[in-house]
Every structure is written in C-alpha cells, then in structure tokens.
Length: 528
Image 1 (cartoon, rainbow, N blue to C red):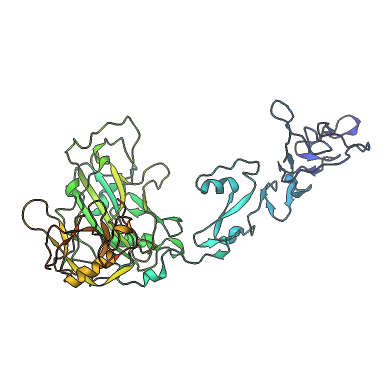
Image 2: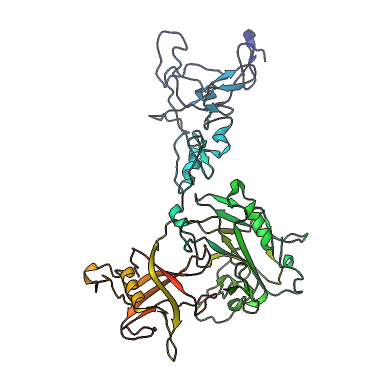
C-alpha cells in the first residue's frame, strides 16, 4: 500500500522500498552475529538499545551488538544466545523467492538443522537421520533439552553399520568361532510362540484360520507379527502373519526380514494346535512330535505343554488386549480351577542365528491402537506368549571342558519314597576321572580332597555339569545337571563307595535309559 510521502507499506513477509523483496524464514541462530553500526552514527549501541523500527525482517526491532533476549514478561535474559535470525544465520536469503540458500552442512526451510552426514543422501542409506534429542532418548532413555535439541542431527545406523555417516560395515561379533567348531555343544535359541484364546466356540472352527478374527465389522482372519532381535539388539518386525498360520507361513515371514537377518533354510518349526483343552493339559490329547525328531526316529521328541495362565483367570475386559478396569484380586494358590484354552503354539528353532539374542515378541496391534487379532470364541480373549523351551543361544561356552574318557548313563532310584536320578554306567576309573574334572564346588580350595583336588559337593554347594548325548546332532545343546557325591549310599554299578546324585529332576521327553552322555565341566562355581 502506498502511503504518505510516497512510502510503501509492505504486506507481511515482503520488504524493500518498493516491496519487491521477499523475507526468508527465521530460525534459532546456530551462531549469533552482531550487525555493526546500523544507524551509522559512529557508535555501537549496547544490546538493549533497539535501533531499527518498522522493519519487516525485524518487526520487533534489532540491535547492533549481540542480541539480548527477553522472556514473555519482557524481562532481559542474561547469558542468552541463539536469537532468531533469518536463515538461522547459516544461509543466504534469495529475495526473489523467499527461500534460504543454506551453507554446506545445513538444511531445512530456515537452515535450522545441522545436516546429517552425507546430506541429501543422509546416513549412506544405512541409517535414520534423527535429532540429538531423539538419539539421546534411544540411548537408554537419556534426556537432552538444550537449545539445539531439535537442531543438531545425527545418524542412528542400521544393524551391522557404524560411523558418523553409517558407511562402515561392522565385523560380525557374538559367538566365539572356536565355540562354533565344537561338536554337539553349540546352543541355538529355541522359542515357543503362542497365540491362544479363551472361551467356547458356538460352532467349532472348521479350519485353523477360523480361531481368530480381525475384530472388524467385515469379519476376516486376524493377523499378528513377530518382533525379532538380532545379535546387535536391533529389532525387526515381520509382515503380518495370519491367525492359525502354517509353519511355512511363519518361516516365510521371518525369512522376508530385510538384510538377511534370518538366513535362508535355517529355521525349524513345529506347530501344536488345540481346540478347547484344559490349560494344564493343553497338548495331552494331541500327540505332536518335534519336526526334527518325529515319531519313529531314533529319539522321538513329543512336545507337551502344561500351562497356568493368569490372564485366563481375569475377565475379558482386563489384560493384554482389553480395556482397563478395576482389577479383581485372585489368591492364586487357593484357586484350583482351570480354564479352557484354544489356539496354536509354534516352536521355532533359530539354527542360523547362534549366539545370545533377546527373546522375540509377538505384536498384535498392527492397526494402530486397535488389536488385529481378536478371539472368535464366545466371550473369549486373546493371550499371546513367547518363552524358551529351556535352550537359549549363548556367545560364550561356559562348559567348554570336555571330561575326556568319561561317559555315563542316567538312572533313577527304585523303591518307595523320594526317587532321585544319579549317574550310572561308569567304571571306577571313569568315576575318578570325573572327580578330577569337577574340581572345587564351594569357593574354598583349602578343603579340597584326594589327589584329584576336588570337592565332593553338597546340597548347598553342588557341582554343575552339562550332559550331551554321545551320539546326537550339532545343535543338541545338552542338559545342565546339578550333582553332588553322596558317600552314604552305593547305587551305581561300581563297587567303589559313593554315588553321583543329581539334585535337579532329569527326565527329557526324548531320553532313553540306555543313552550315553559325554560330560562337560566348567571353571566356574555354582552359586545358589
């Protein structure tokens, strides 16, 4: 608008005597800059003296020295910095377009961000560009609230990549390669993934894809997903898996994770299906055998689940997939009732991912806050669980010492009363060799005995060993056993005094009394 004295009154974000120049975006200055003698009076005015009025670039005026900020009550702030500046003081304003032309290393409409390395191809395509506030939160929940929390940027690299720009590949780490060379002792992680539901079906499902729904008005099968954690701790979420999926569908979803997180042809899956079974007898009536050890093999392995699920005891509007309400108190030990459970449990062996990995998780909220897996049973609720079958991967073999020349069988006492297991099938020489292998058990070398320099152990300070079948597969992993030497009774086949008793029950579902076991010991001491 042309006003008195032929002076233009410019519209917002326009400037110059003829209003032909654009004003660029402002942001917190990365570096403050004094403007010098703006009024050309030969004196640099102090920071609280406003020099320019009616400026479209500085509607509240500006100063010649470093600016002095004020709070909302117009009180001066001491030791202040990073005042709002055009293009955040890290770019030039293109007056024809009103866009900031940022200096190298800065980006954003107001050049307000310190660019991630490699911008515009940030993080080399192997990471995510995040603010320093986000990076701090991702690092064990740290809090960063300084002025540049939304300004300073950095790369959060994908699993297997490192460096400021995520351009460097990390070497593999985790499992000791010498451990992988061992025979019959490598432990790969085995996890059970359960998608279960309570309640009774009005009409029994005709197929596995009818146990669950998507919870929508247009009913279809529900979906769930697996969140897998690799050796680096990075999490990967599979594509949706249909309710009642086959093992092939579960394996395909895991194989399709990017970066070959799950090596091809490395999984082994067994599916257990049950319709309206008592929770503590979940798979008693349905004989399911491990896919690697089926019925008829040398060591058939029947999978049996006996569960006690507290979620099954709470009302449907309480628990994992339901609205919160006042909790009803259950005494637990006084409650002997059982619940009806239906659903599926997938036992998945991650043979291509040796080493210690975090337990996977089941995701059922694949559509925002709305669950994508809903029970099709009347008054039923969905319960999901992940647990290990007892064998988990490890990076270090703590039972690396093979007791050479010793093999044993496992026997159980006969007769009445409490019957414990014990080592059998050893000769006197083998028993003496085992004593030497066991060593100390109570953190005190001064009370060790005999020429074998060992402790007999006790119920309070027992020995711990790993038993691995002499003839087995690479990923057997073995069984841990806690034992002590009982000199008061002679149970094994030798005539020498004493019996190696096991404190923990030993009755694997695929064991035979004739199985021979190699014995592995540890340099460590069991602390109970």
